[in-house]
Structures are given as C-alpha cells and as structure tokens.
Length: 397
Figure 1 (tube, rainbow, N blue to C red):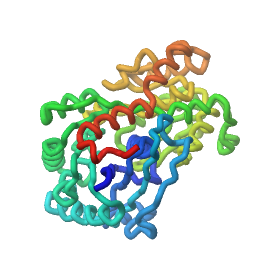
Figure 2: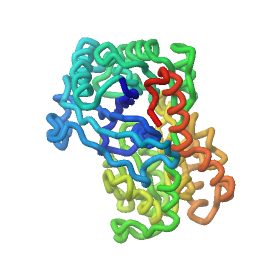
Figure 3: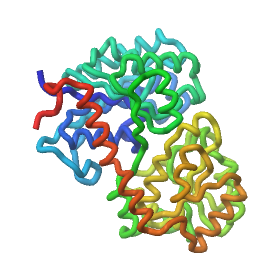
Figure 4: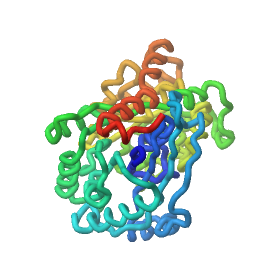
C-alpha cells in the first residue's frame, strides 16, 4: 500500500476562478502528496440557465495531469514532488442540496469516477457539505473538512436544513475540521472538538509582480485612473456601494474582472464601469499593475460575515490600496485596508486613496503579506493531514 491520495472536492472547476482549493492542490503536490482535484459537477439543469455549460455535461477529457511549476506551486518543497490530477466529473442530478437521496446517488457516481482517476487509499479534503455522502462510497482513510463558507446561506436550489444536516454529519466523520473565518470556526466548534483556523492568503510572488510588469493590453482603451474589483459577481456583492463610487467619481474608470452570475445592469449601464469577464489567473498582476486602487464590496449578510476575503490578501500583495465594505472578517484587517461602513464613507476613502493617501507604510504591509502566504497555509494543512493518517500513508521522501 502506497501513500494516500489527497482528494479535494471543490465548489469550483479547475479552469474557473483560481481560489483556495487550487492553491491547496498545487501546494500539497509540491510537498510530495499525490492530489486529485475534483471540481463540482454541473447538474443536468445547469446548461438551461448557462448554455456555456453544455460541454461540461460529458467532459471530453475527464482526467488531466497538471504540471507543477514554480509560478503556481509552493516555494517549499520536499525531496519528492507528488502528482496533481484534475477530475472533470460527469453531470449529476439536480436538487442535490434539497434531497439527501439525490445527493447519495450523485456521490456514489462521483466515487466511481474518483476510483478510476486515482488509486487509493484516500484522504478526503472536502470543501462541500454534500461530500459527506462520498465517505461511505469512497472509504477514505481519513477526512479533514475544509469549511470555507456558510453553505446554507447560498441562494438557489437549496434547503438550508438539508445542507446544515449534511455539514453536521461531515464534521462528525472528520478527523479534524479547518475553517477560513472566525464565525465558521465558532460554528464548527459546536460540532467537532478539533477545529483549526486556516484563513485564506495570497500567492505573494505572483501578485508582487504587479509592481514590475507592464499593464495588461486590454486596459489600453480604458483611461486612467482605474480602480479594480476582481472576483465573482453574484448575489453577495453590494452593487449599490459600487454604483455610489462610480457615480461619485465619473472621471475614474472601474474595471470589473470575474464571472457574472446575476443581473449587473445597474452598474454596466454606467459609462465608467467596464466588465471584462473572467480573466486568466496568471494575468491578474498585469491588470492590477494598471490600476491605482482595488475594491471589495459585500452586502452584509450571514453568508458574507463568514467570508474570509482572499482578494484582500492578493490586492495587498500587489501593493494596492484597498477600499472595502465592512464585514466581520474585513474589520479585522482595518490596519491595512480602508473599511467603509457606508457608501458615502467609501466614496470619500477612495478619493483620498486616489489623491495619494496610504493606509499603512510599506514595511507594515509587507510584514502582513509575508505572514499570509499560501506557502504558510499549505504547511498548516500538510501537518494536519499527516496527523490524521498513519505514517505509512504519508508521502514518501
């Protein structure tokens, strides 16, 4: 029996927005683990809402091998480099977060695909509560639940009581639970005795390049000054806050980068707001190089109060001043970020930033950025996985 394969069940596909599970996958592989990244399958109904998803019903290439490179891998390596494979699952039945029976069927199908893609034994690192029903089908040697969101707080085809029950059951079968935010950690401590806080972070070297690379050619037609917001545009975004900023600063261009998942017409109709869609992760430093500030804009809900904002870490690593709406997690970063409690306050803060004001000096910012790298976070997770498994299932040197 060889070392365990780390199976990460993520809420996003590998080729979508680069986020926490991508960094864990690359970083753990760089530390010697064999890793299988299983992106969330689309449901059979999903292409009716988004026709671009038709080609994901039956993926042409279900399993791909991802080369590990220094650009996106962990800086600290063991003597052996592991493997990173990506599973693009077949479509699943809808209503999985409403009916447990449907979810069990879907997870049994996913377990067969995982077994075909990578050999066991497995250590399961799930980011989705519905992965609980993968456990009896996959028989992992250990489970470490990575709690990244208040999953019952999402809109759509979700019954919160079903999602909460799945999450409680997942915590019960986990060796350890890790959480991104204080509110999530506190919630999980009611369900599990061993909960570790592992916040999000930034790939520091990657984003620090914003200080030296040329701005992206796509910005050439957008006048300066420019302000960036990078991320998904869903129901969690405070569009009223952004509209106040854009209308109050008509000579400033607002560059919106990321997938659009809801109606954004109240912003896109403004002449100084530019939606560029999802852009490659490797090119984000070039976009930030051409912007003078960056934004985070959340509505204040139970869901967003539990969000540890990855973009704040990335913006700061890129050397950008950040103006953000107030949430519990963002408030903790107020030494480094301009935290606005009202749209009017955010507008005044952005004016100050564009006039040259700085939230903190470079030395303080750099110390914060260096202590919040993905390398440090992966090291934490690596130690947690090793503690959850017998030594013969650890990566071999």
